[in-house]
Length: 283
Ligand SMILES: Cc1cc2nc3c(=O)[nH]c(=O)nc-3n(C[C@H](O)[C@H](O)[C@H](O)COP(=O)(O)OP(=O)(O)OC[C@H]3O[C@@H](n4cnc5c(N)ncnc54)[C@H](O)[C@@H]3O)c2cc1C
Image 1: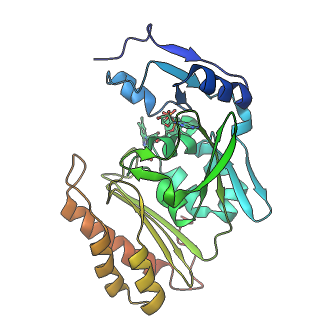
Image 2: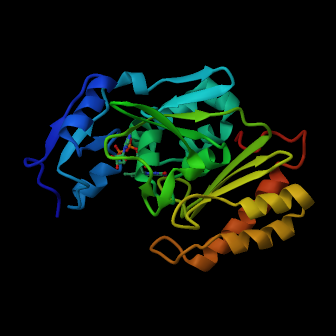
C-alpha cells in the first residue's frame, strides 16, 4: 500500500547552512535529493521516516569543478550533469559512462550521485567507479566537515559511517592515472538494475571494483595484486572467485554472477591492453 503523504513533514532549507542547522535542531530527518529511491519506498508503503529534508534547492551542492589535481563533484550533481560535464569526461570517463547507463532520462535528470551513495545499494552503478577511483566522500554537519575514503564509507549492507546529523556534500576524486573501464551487465540495455557492474583502471597497479557481488561494492584487492604482479588474467580470475560472495536473488543467481564477474575481468584486461585502441568506454 502507498504511504499516505499527509502525516509526513517536509523541511525546505534554502542554503546548506540552513539544512545543517535543521538536521542539528530538528533531526533525525531523512535527506531528500532527487527522491528517485525514496519515492519508490514511499510508493511501496515502506517510508524511510516521516520527517524529510528537501535538499533540491541547494545549488551550492550541484557544482562540478577541478581544484588543483582533484575533481570535486557536489552531492546533488545529477547523472545528466555528470554525463555532460567536460571535467568528468576528461578526468573520470568511467563515471560519465556509468551516468549514461543509469535508469532512463527521467532518472538521469533527477537522480544524484549523493543519492546513489546515500542509498548504498550493492548494485549502485556509480559506486564501483568511486571505489576504483579511490574517491573521498565529504560529510558535513553544523560543526564542520570530515573526509572519508570511499573504500571505508560502508560498514555493511546499506550501512555507512554517515551520522544522522551529517549530509554527504561532495565527492573528491584525485587524478586517476591509467585507462579507465566501466561495464554494467543487466537484463537489458536500459532501465535495468545491474546483475554485476564493474569499474577498472589499467595502470602499473591496476584497480578493480565490483557491484552486486557482495553486501557492499568492493575493491578486489587480491585480484588487483595478481594483475600487478603477474599480468596473468586467468590467475587473477581465480583470485577474484575467492574474494566475491554473490547471492541468489530476484535479479540473478550467484553462479551466473560469478561467471559474469570473471568474464568482465577478462574483458577489462583485453580492452585496456592495447595502447592505441580507441578508448574502451568511448562508444
Ligand atoms: C526507474 C528507476 C531506475 C533506476 N535505475 C538505476 C540504475 O540503473 N542504476 C543505479 O545505480 N540506480 C538506479 N536507480 C536508483 C536511483 O535512481 C539512484 O540510486 C539515484 O542515484 C538516487 O539518487 P536520488 O538523488 O534520487 O536519491 P534520493 O532518493 O533522494 O535519496 C536516496 C537515499 O540517499 C539519501 N541521501 C540523498 N542525498 C543525500 C545527501 N546529500 N546526504 C546524505 N544522504 C543523502 C536519502 O536520505 C536516501 O536514503 C533507479 C531508480 C528508479 C526509480
